[in-house]
Image 1 (cartoon, one colour):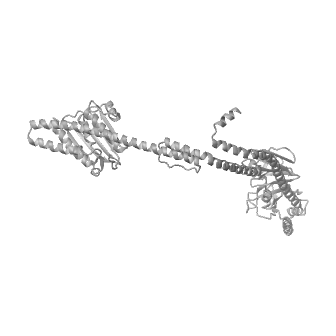
Image 2 (tube, one colour):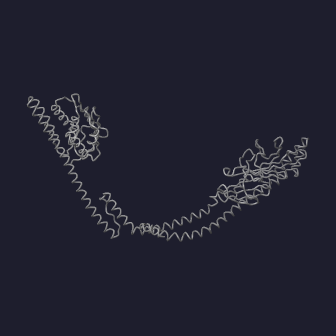
Image 3 (spheres, one colour):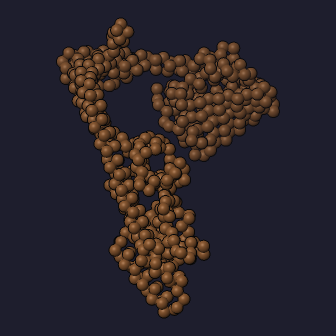
Amino acid sequence: MGFIKSMYEYFSLKRRITILFVASSIIPFIGIGLISYYTIDSILTNKIQSAIQSNVKQVQLSLQNTFNNLNHVSQQLAIQGTVGKKLDKFLTENEPYERSRLVSDIKSDLAAITFTNPNIGLTMYYFKDDGTTLFENLPVKKSFAPDKHPLLAEYYGISYYGPHISNGPFTNQYVLSALRKVDLPDRDDVYVYIETGLKLTQNILETDRIGENVFFLILDNDGRIAYSEVPDVFPQNAVFKSDPGKESSGVGNGYFWYKRTGNQGWSIVSVVPEAEYNKEKNRWMMQTALFSLLVLAISLVLAWLLWKMVYRPLTKFHNEIKWAGQSNFHSESAKTNIPEFDYLLNQFQKMKQQIRELFAEVERKEKRRADLEIEKLLYQINPHFLMNTLDTAHWLAVMNGQNEIDRLIVSLNKLLYYNLGKLGEHSTVREELDALREYVTLQQIRYDFKFDVRIDAEEHVLDMTIPRFILQPLVENALYHGLDDKGHIHVEVKYNDRIEIAVRDNGAGIPVETVERLLNNEQAEKQKVGMGIGMNYVKRMLEAHYNGEAKMEIESEIGRGTTVSLRLPVREVSEA
């Protein structure tokens, strides 16, 4: 009891309400149901067994009457009957006229017998030694051989067969048959063969079945199965194990069976699948179960109504708290139509509004801080480059004529105009490449060695927008990797679902550790100003404009060069 009490304390209000309503409704119903079950089970079992027994008895009596009728007709055709005596005279008569008269008389007698016995089918005399037939009232199959038929019983010179396929040539229906010895004085191989009507046997086996899945077996005198409607479970010629006696019953192979034995020693067995046997009981149990479910459903509806008034508002309040924990502050306030809960939810909605405003303020401040950092980086780069370039212009003015200085100053003005544009502005690929060319011109004048810079761009990419000032730092970075007189830089821009930019050089390469720092370090490198600040600026610029959708990769091999790749989404970049 202590364990149950401790478990009950952890149950939610919803579970407690449900358990109480279900228990109060189901427990009395279960008690009444158990009493009803045992009573109804006894009644239905007796009813089903009585129906099966009655059915088997009727089939057994029908088969027995059929065999008695075959016996009666065969007696008239044996030597004791008038037809048998005429057959004996026919077989011993040599005078043609008398033989013809006897043939006519025998056929007339056979016609009268079959006419007065409508259940009789194929009738004839069978000569066993030579396999011939005589005086047949219907055509006979060439494969006729009575010994191949399933033998049910044999006594007093008569053998009963069946059910088996008729020996008539125009049907494949089951029949019962009898083979009786005529006992002629001069011949010992003459027999009377008689079959029931073509549909009689099937009608007998289908009489008053208690269900669609009720089947019959017919056993011979030795208890072997001569005929089976379920050969997969009870194969023909197998021994059927049952108690001796005129009547018996039992269960085996998933079937309930009931057996009755006829006067000739054969037996009829009714086999019913246990599922079919219990079908009516199962139907009653199903009805009881459905009624139980109805009672349970009513109990659950009542519990749900109470839960709706008490527990459902708590669930809504829980969802509001969960959404707030997931930073979802834009959901509308739920209504419970219960004043106390609605007041609490309105207060919580006001609190979410205040938190949402605080979050927005923090985001604005963080955005301004990121913009200031990028602007700081930009102004760190531009003065550095400007000082070096102006220093180079000073020495060129001293050492050379005015034409060289003019070329330097023109390129410098164009580049400074582009680089000192408004922070956060975006430009086209075409404008970025034009500025890069001016930058390369200045650097070729500045350095005391020649290097080759090749720029390839697909035509349809030139008017696509990208952030300003992201190519120059990458090319400048390549110059710091140890280019010599045979050095070259290849800038390639193409489109493949995204804008793909690659800057390749054949310089000295970058160590793996340095590549990792360039890609992953949040702070600019202090030792190498151009490499650290420039690469850090490009990385931060991509993060600010593309929110993590752009990718920058660096592949480098010492002594063979470096490739910096950018993959940018195709869309209008947002202005700061």
